[in-house]
Length: 140
Image (cartoon, rainbow, N blue to C red):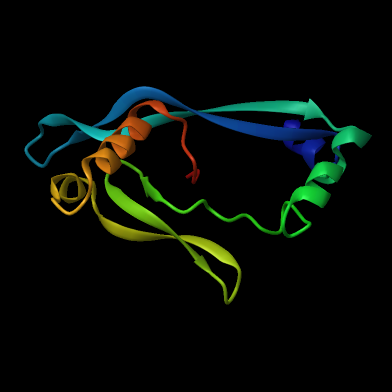
């Protein structure tokens, strides 16, 4: 019913993703379960009635303050490091076609053991992994 109302333009669906603070459990080849650093993320969805105030997700403030003029046209990831608990990624932007992307840097374990990376960068990454809500979510 909600999908039909969304398709017909009656409601808008908003999603918010929350880090539960718990980590996923991985089962090894020997049958032993062990905790990983991958956080468990919960999605919270709300449906709101569409009105003339939120028609097409348009905001006059964003029209004049966003650098491209269109909020939905340009969505760049902020420069920095991202992780899913297994692999560390660096944000990248392709100017040729205007797309954001994630370039894998290394595994999280080898990244944390590396002596070339500053300790405050490692601590910041682990703290964000444990406590903060996710920056980028890919639903499967």
